[in-house]
Length: 484
Image 1 (cartoon, rainbow, N blue to C red):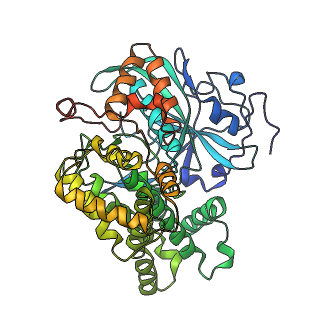
Image 2 (image 1 turned 45 degrees about the vertical axis):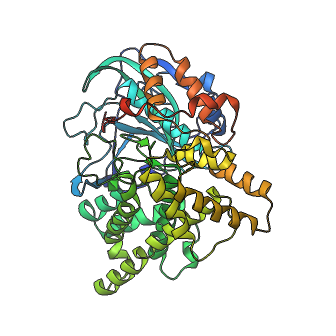
C-alpha cells in the first residue's frame, strides 16, 4: 500500500486483481475545460482527502492520481424485466481509497466518457442530473439511509444533447463498492463457475466477514445480502423514497442505495406513485418496491446456484428457502420502523392492521406522507387533512390509549418520533428549483437546500420553509428521467 499523496489519495485497487473478464482498463478521456461546481468537504475529510489539494483534472478524468487505475466494470442486468449485457457505459472507477479508519471505498467518475460498454451512448452526463444525484444522495445520507455519496461535481466545458442541450458534468461518486446483482449475473453468463466463485469470494472478503465460520459460505453471502436489502427497502418505504429504476444492475450487494436516476419522494401518500418517464407500467411504483427487491434477490440466487450445492435440485431448494425469507424480514423491519414513527416502543399483535388503517386513510384523503407524520410528532393535527375526519379521530384515540399504556413517558415517545420522522425531505419542486438556479449559474439555492437536508430530524425554524408541499396542479404531471 502506497503512502498517501499530498491530496490524500491512498489507493489499493483490489477489483483490478479479479480476472480480466470483470473489467476493462481505461485511459483518461480528457474534457476541454473542467471547472469545479461543488465539493463535499465533510465527506472529503472522512476519506482522508485534502480537498484544496485535489486537482480538478483528476475528478474530470483528464489525469489519474498517483496510485489510481481507471477501470470500467462489466456487469449485466434485468432492465424492466429484460436481461441485457451492460457495464459501465459512462462511468469509470478511479481507484479504491483506503480511508484513515481503514475502510475501503470506490471512487468513481460518472459521466466520464465512452467505454467498451457504452452501447452507442456518448458516455457523458449533464449538469442537472449530476447535481440531482449530489443533492439526493446527500439527503439520503442525512436521513440515515445506506447510500453512495457524492464527493464533487465538475463541469467539462462541453455540451451534451439529451431532451435539451445541457452543460456537460462529471460527478465523483463514493461507494462501499459497485458490486451489483448484475455483476453476478454477468459472471455466470459470460464467465464460468471459476470466475463466479472468485467474484463471490472477493465480495465476501470485502463486505461480509464471518463466512469462514459457516457451513455454506455462499449461502451466507446470499442471506447477508437479503438481510441488507430488507433493511434498505424498509428505510426507503418509511420516508417515501422512490428509486424509480430498480433493475438488477442497480441493486448493490453492499446494501447501499445506488444510481440516482429517476428518483423522487412522494408528496401525497399513494402506493401507485410513479415519477419515472419510462416506467409506464408502474413496475417500480412506490408500493411495488419491496416485491421488486424480492424479485431481484431471486435473480441473485439463480446466479449463485452453481456455488450453493453441486446437486442442482438441492441448490434450487437452498436458494428458494433463502429468498422466501425476504418478505418476512422486510415486513419486520418496516413494521418496527412504523412503530417508531408512532412513538411505540413495544410490538402488539394488531400492529400491522393499526398502521395500515392510518395509511389507508392517508391514501383515501390524499394526505401528505411526510407532513402527516410531522403533524403527529408535533401534535399539530390541524396541519393534516385528516384532522376532524371521524375515522381518523377514532384511530387517534386508539393511538393515544396505546401511548398511555407504555412504560416510557410521553417525552420519550416524542423524542422517538422526532428521530424517526424527518421534518423535511428533498421535495421534488425544491430540487427542481435548485437545479434550475444552478444551471443559470446560481449555486446558492442548491447549497442552502443541501445544508437544511443534512439534518432532517432537527425540526428547526430554518427548515419550516422547506416543509410546504407543491401546489397540486404544478406537480400533477411531474416526471423524472433515466439515463440523463
